[in-house]
Length: 146
Image 1 (spheres, rainbow, N blue to C red):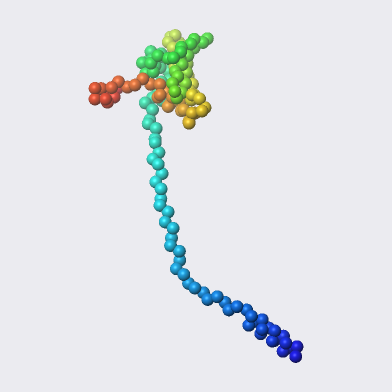
Image 2: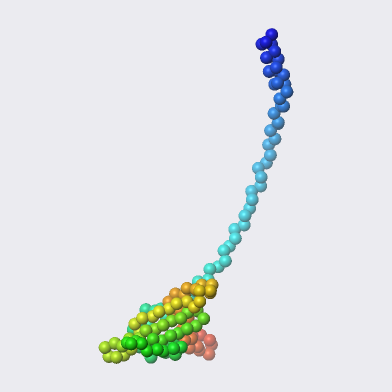
């Protein structure tokens, strides 16, 4: 009788269970299309007209023709130092006399102006380029070739 009761209770419990839910097949979701965004064009800085290596060992008069008059000229023990300053950078040119007592450029020091700028660092060549006198222009507006 016990076996019958156990079988009856197992059968009763099996009858109480819900029938499995029918499987409904659905179409896969539509793919999400993400439009590729074109990155903004990167502005490439123009090549400098002069680099520091081009002006090393030049005489004072030649550099005055290239850069114009310095904002400040000071004499130190053995050197003459020219200061150029604009909105972008500060540039110091250090001239020392050679064996003929001709002063020649031997050292250049540059730095950006103000750390609060968007880009407080300015390359030495870009600083030099920012201080160059404008190239002579023809009546049509084109630079005169040198």
